Length: 385
Image (cartoon, rainbow, N blue to C red; front, top):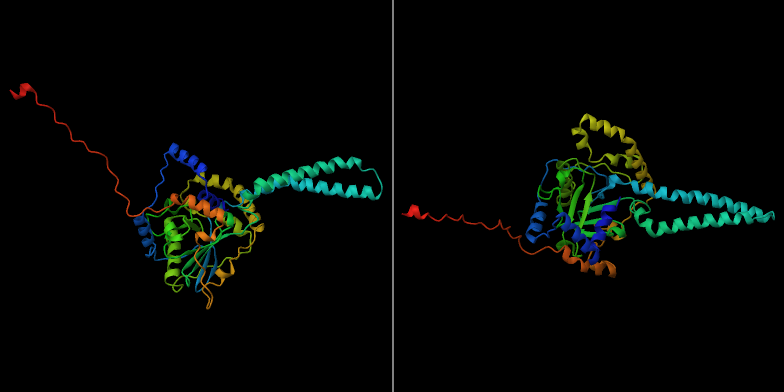
């Protein structure tokens, strides 16, 4: 499900009038957004260069692993994929029913013409069903298709490819989620690199990678959620250490991961429903475990929708330049820049660049508040005498 990535990309292209509404919401709920400083960005990047685990391993899914390439699944809410597919198919159910009835009426209409029988009684049903199908399809293609494409009729997975030879990272996303971009390996920060950059203790979220605007050169940050949702921070540290060692030192000494096929097997849709939940299962009370068993049918329904979603999508394919990157005699892909975007996208990114700008220098120390000297009481005249 690409809802999270789609929302982040829309936020980066948001217009000023919409941003004012967001600022009112932040003020209402006391949400304070602070821009990072260069010193903080440098610290986070430096932390990503150190070893954080003695047991590097990846939980996958891994689609390619070679001397110079490792390719993993990306995306924030892959485990929630399926609900939009079920709703979309339910919306189209009347279209299927009306289409079947319309086809049957058309055949009856043709037979009546051939046999020179009366056909006036068929005109109204044919027109009615045609209008219903056209109306529902028109409303869907205008308003609903953009939502369905977050799970259907698009690339089967978001991908992230690490190329050790070129020291580059490639993100494979649909155009409405930011498109395919090429980023430098040097300059990345990770939620698995330190406790300071960790997110929610690593529970229920995948490994998070971030490139600040100082690194991307596109006036906005880039980020990616890598692999499966974690059960704890230790799993994300192991995942990050596996990637770091691969890019900095090579695949030697790393455990070879299990390669996952791009073919949409059913178990690839049902097993993600339980990613990141082991932490809760182990610590849950008996009542909670019974409740989880009772809602298992819901997991099965979402898993079925997930599988249908995979079947209705196609295998993602990299551009030829990225596929051949690192091979002898082949050019190195250029890093993505602002000029690679369409003109209207460049305009929106320039207008919003101040929202992501990294401030120079170091964050000033917070003032602890004014301190007042306690006023001494005036001596009593009787005491002076």
